[in-house]
Length: 371
Ligand SMILES: Cc1cc2nc3c(=O)[nH]c(=O)nc-3n(C[C@H](O)[C@H](O)[C@H](O)COP(=O)(O)O)c2cc1C
Image (cartoon, rainbow, N blue to C red):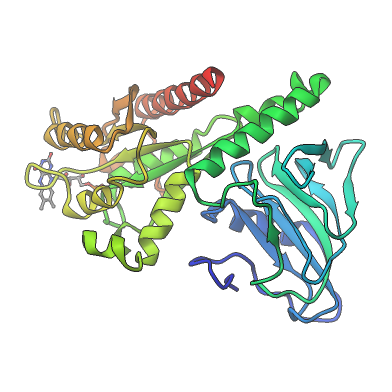
């Protein structure tokens, strides 16, 4: 199921049958989709039709997901939800955007959910990865009129939205002094890294290096791969003026949702692979600006792929990315040191990859502390 305006999946299909169990398997499934979603959330509805009078759903959220504050006015809808996993910061706003109420609601907290009358501007931010709510709301649903978005809150997907989300978190933490050191702490620590391989080869050693980074993710850090390089059309500035191709929209959304990026690319004929350069061209002006970035040079040869990484540095300079030197490493991947899970087995290389990830994570956290 897709939202009318979204180029990607925003909700799963409702399960069939008269009786549906809300079990761990179902929750795990919607969580998995939310991790892969460019917007960091996914809905699993139980009502069979948008016209049903009572809408019931699981809503899985990742901490980077921005739910633009809204209310339900057309028609006015009551709404209630309880947290099944994780925790959220809940906000209720006055008409002018000032925060009226703000509280932590979580599966192990005193507050487990809310019941909201129609017409209140509200919003929420996941405080823990893989947070899941069970939500009920009056039907019917029409994508065009379901939510009246708050004019004081930026539009989802814009750079202002991320700044606003962080400002809300700060306001939340300022109002929860007792939680600042305990439960709220992971909020500021959790972050997402986007992994981009410059190789389209199925058994790619560069993808294996990035996959290994996934298996070494520190606590609170989500690493996800951009898998659609091969679907990007050839860069053409004319397309920027008309309708942007969907894979490009997806790339830019995934970059916007990421706190930092790690790339790993082969060298072909002394230069960057054309498909990877094409991806980078699509980020000029939007996508990598001031984005912390590191790289893993996975070439197993002495001096291998060096020209590619020199070129990459030049390009990253043009797009004004924030190159993190400590996260730029040589992580030589020999083909016989890649296992069936497509991860690198060599302990020294694994340690190097872990160092790069940690350096990038520390850089992002240091930048956050400066804000
Ligand atoms: C057509 C072609 C040209 C290549 N040119 C270079 C090169 O100029 N410099 C280099 O270091 N490696 C070069 N290589 C080796 C690749 O970088 C190497 O095979 C790498 O492991 C491929 O990455 P992947 O395993 O992620 O697909 C070339 C490979 C191919 C197929």
